[in-house]
Picture 1 (cartoon, rainbow, N blue to C red):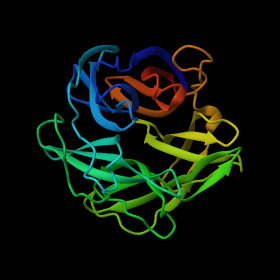
Picture 2: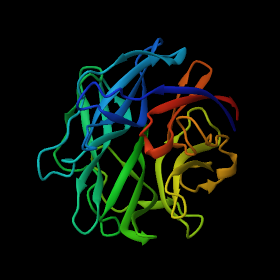
Picture 3: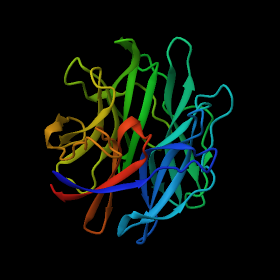
Length: 306
């Protein structure tokens, strides 16, 4: 594949106390023929994220139409799995509602934090979301007691399908505490009841890798192509990888074919991560963040060739 970078789109200017910095991970929804809505986690000065959005022109995603003035989803109640931050990973139309799958953060004592997937539902076109429950839809399992995160959910005649990051530990490297999780998959009849333990579908390529996160299926690809973010022990930031599959079950990593690498300077600053994609007519746009996992906001690229 080959992507043409189109530039930086958005980073908060600090004027809103709940949206002081960061904008990640960009999660697109096609509102209509004219507008794309990009949901993001926006952080206050304590780095606690709440979910808002940036509306952009569908024919020119570098042009901002509107930015939310208040969160569409706030943090959870004290003691809940999402009481220290929420960020979006997938918004899926289901009937006349929108299902928002999001990551909830909770601080730990012996590990820095926990991450689990929650579900909130909108009945007003995505202006506000209400939690389906106060507990995760991907709760702990025996092999995933620490992280079940970064969900991408799709739907077809057979039901709902989820790709997500799961892991059971943290590791120490050069004085840093690092989470360890790879990509897994499950099925559900209703998008709410997943249960069980996920099947590993994309594993680490080397001992240096410790995170494979934020999966996203590219629209219109044959065979199937999944993007994801790779983090290594030797490099504290991310790059984007890709795998292909003919059945959505067995995946082959082809990271060298992803077609987008980080620029060393500017807002990317040597990193690209948290990719998502959306179709507009014959175009496919890629939204992604640069250095610091969203500290500089997000930008976009356009697919030139498969």
